[in-house]
Length: 139
Image (cartoon, rainbow, N blue to C red; front, top):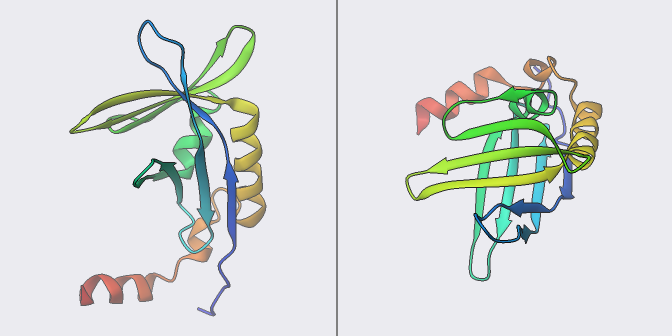
């Protein structure tokens, strides 16, 4: 397999943290996609002293834009809220659960940009299985 240069798609899409009986809290979030890791999307939350990254399947995000997808740690579902199309993202960890809301148009635009780099279903062409196995066995 020949070496394919890695292409990145980066954007900022604000998420809103839903808090019971309070207004939603805006969270600036970086979204990243790398052709070198074609199945994954990384979401980076920037805090005052640290940043937290969540990595989940690009396919999960795409499926959640049109319905409901995911079980367990990450769930994504499209809803209509006050006349706007939004995407609800539920993240669960041993520390708790967060319900987040994102603008569906912005997420769809991000995903469209990732599809221009690596089409959905074509991810296998961007993975060097031999190199991945070698790295896994060496670790």
